[in-house]
Amino acid sequence: MARLRWTRTPASRSLRAAMVWLPNLLYRWRRLMLEGGAVAVSGDDDVTSNRTVLQMEDRIRELERQFERKTLEVEILKGALDKSRSIN
Image (cartoon, rainbow, N blue to C red):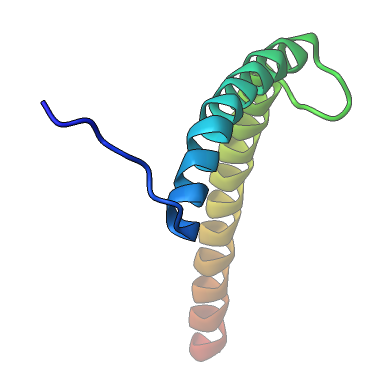
């Protein structure tokens, strides 16, 4: 089998550099993700835990339902007011 030989072009130097820093970058991202997960569970100020996010989403859904009900009530009352005005 023929042995591959690196050429001395700028592209080959960039590729060799990428082969060095890319694995380091991936390991760094993985470490940050794992550390970030631990921080999120502890509930620090900078990071909101998943539990808190789920509670906020539930509250938002509840408020949206209430808003829809109130909007419907307003529409019904406007319709009733319009009918009462047209009768008088």
